[in-house]
Length: 78
Image (cartoon, rainbow, N blue to C red; front, side):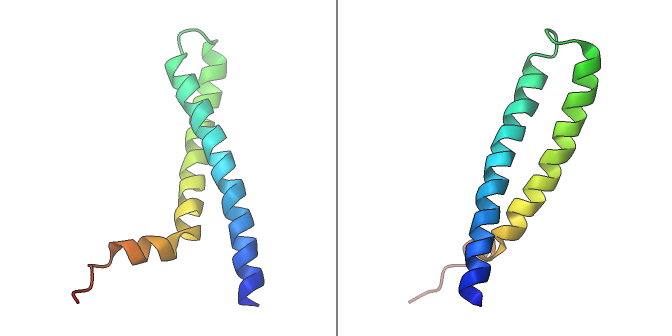
C-alpha cells in the first residue's frame, strides 16, 4: 500500500511542479509586460496567477514535507 501511495504522490508532485512552473512564467511575464498588455487582462490575469501560485506552493510544500523536515533537523554528531 505504501508503494502505491508513494507512486501517486510522485505523479501528483510532478504535475504540481509543471503547473507551478507554468504559473510562475505567466505571473512573471504579466508583471514584466504589464505596460504592453491591456489593463483589463492584467487586472484579471496577475491576481489569479498569484492566488494560484500560493495554492500550488502550499501543495508543493505538503507533498515534500518529509524532505523539508529531514533537511531542517540539525546534523547528527558522530
